[in-house]
Length: 280
Length: 110
Image 1 (cartoon, rainbow over the protein chains, first blue to last red):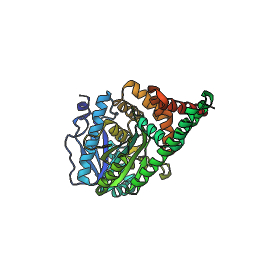
Image 2 (cartoon, rainbow over the protein chains, first blue to last red; image 1 turned 120 degrees about the vertical axis):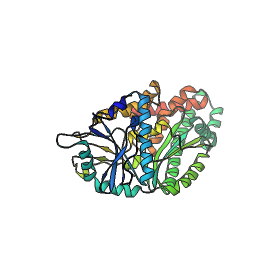
Image 3 (cartoon, chains in turn cyan, yellow; image 1 turned 90 degrees about the horizontal axis):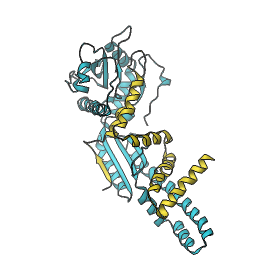
Image 4 (cartoon, chains in turn blue, orange; image 1 turned 60 degrees about the horizontal axis):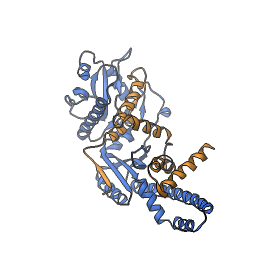
């Protein structure tokens, strides 16, 4: 396996999984990508969770990458349960040596430069989890429901039946535009209601891009930062929203706070103002 | 039950969303291994869950969807999802949806 060659003599870089509050355990055994040995590099009260690798990104067939992605998350889950809080790194963040410093020194340097920022986030995420919520519509059912429930559309359809072909054509256009408007109103209303109810119960929210689906229209794709003890409550809110005909809700988690930890940190000491966070 | 609770067996796409698009990254060309490689990988891993054709649709949709918020969400619903749906169905409803999306496209082209 490609990964077995990574560990050993050529391992001059460090793959970083996460940053955690410093834990007593330093060795997490061979649980990393391709069985890499995972351990912590402690720096003051925090630690980076790493394995040794050569200074090149992980690349491979889609199936292999999918396996790595899962292992990356598994490692983070494992250290999260031990450390109580976690800042997950994105897949494939690898720090190498430069002319002056070893890879390990560069990791320490990053932890030092970002120290207050990382520690504040670790405190913030203590006892919180990320949940994924996707709201999907079955367009067939939703359009059907709108056509059947709208007085305006019902009246227009009745009118159309009694008119000449030319007039009926104009009425058809009116119906089409009424359906369109009602769908937009409904999507906006449903999104607002659902979002509001979830926001009230969350410590943070993030609106993600909606994704193309086979036979569903995704009207919302949210990440929530939630206190552990409120996960069930969120589930109950979603259960209620999902009872509506034609509406389907996908609810995933608990995840490490990937979305809320997402920031760009520079080792070279970029000014604070140039950093981008995408938290709530 | 319309609420699908995915716990232990999280879907691959959800993994990809978070592990490849979320999380902390470090930007420093001196010490970080190829950012470009990272982006390519992200792309590759998303393909995992989608066939080649689906991937093209996916990429197109992602590129076309405006950033955030309910207004954009509804635009996406009417423009993209319904167009495909209408194409597969006859009848008044299919026709209506087709008309809505065509009108909208025309207005955007104007």
